[in-house]
Amino acid sequence: MINLKIDPEFQSQIPPLTDDEFHQLEENILKEGKLLSPLIVWNNTLVDGHNRYAILQKHPEICFSTMPLRFANREEALAWICKNQLGRRNLSPEQKRYLLGKQYESEKKAEKIFHGNQYTLAKKSGGSHDDTHHSGKKTCDRIAEENGVSRASVLRASHYTRGIDIADNLSPGIKQKVFSGEVKFTNEEMSKLV
Image (cartoon, rainbow, N blue to C red; front, top):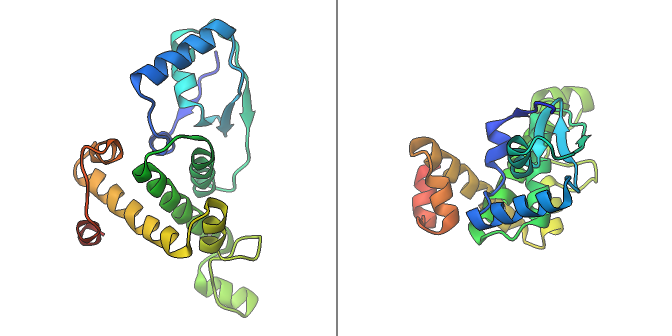
């Protein structure tokens, strides 16, 4: 069996399955005798398929494949994870808002890493830096359009994501409590955190 690296930050972007969902997934995989979808990897690091990989660890006889993807940097990988999860999971509103904000923040960082900062961009291009993506649209506008929300919703989601990350650093495990609905933050409390 291939030993893949687990990046805690990548794994933490993927909303966990309930025990019932995990057991159902395990049953389905055992019934098939193989994984139907490949595990997505980047430089031998697992990007998508953490639950399936955990099942494979328990059942090394199961056949599986991997599909490598290319990312310029970890921020691009994080943005892909968020976009992928937003497109295929039944998410709570809190999880969706968090992933939307994380995708936006990751894509902005990826663009900055790839293209340089506002000063190096100004020198190279003679212009000023903005957060445009290769589509020509601003990152925020593109993500809003892809997810059927407003630009303001993406910006609020970014603020929310930063607040949740700060809260989780201060009190580990709080993010999962927020996602499960056990803990709620007001916008005012989130603003104070950020």
